[in-house]
Image 1 (tube, rainbow, N blue to C red):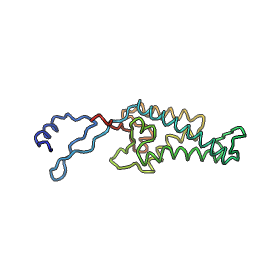
Image 2 (image 1 turned 90 degrees about the vertical axis):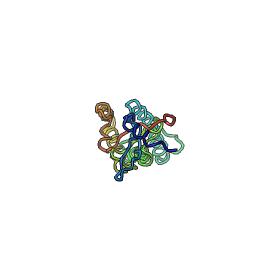
Image 3 (image 1 turned 180 degrees about the horizontal axis):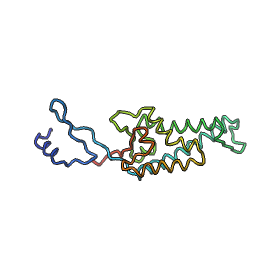
Image 4 (image 1 turned 90 degrees about the horizontal axis):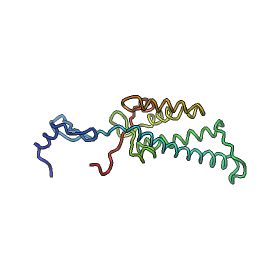
Length: 195
């Protein structure tokens, strides 16, 4: 059942639409249709919660990769009889760190628009301009800015992460340096029962 035109016009003029709802779009031949809803920007609390989940998951994954794969299987000690000595300055270990971070951050971002933490909190990464997907190049650039400092500077990488957190908190848009460089933004997805 289609509502009559008068109620749609009245509703459009009243301006009762909020940021999360669709907006009317007038096409070339006078047709009016609903555009996709504009999602609200993600709150700092939600972004930090998602990043905490990502950090815990990534730490576990890195521990598994570095200890089990690198040291035990490739290091010649499959049964764990020798004490562990993980040295990320070795080329092989550093390569495993970079590949694990790329697999965790870049692949799900391109395919689904969210890492595990973002998906659990209800956030999604989108491009600033309307696009179906985030390109591989943008997702990789975003991950390099986000994780490149801590990986490259090791113990001093925490200072780099602090700069990134401040770059998210200070601007009114809530977009960090990594988001501005990649042309992306983190948005909150509407809840299932909210409509």
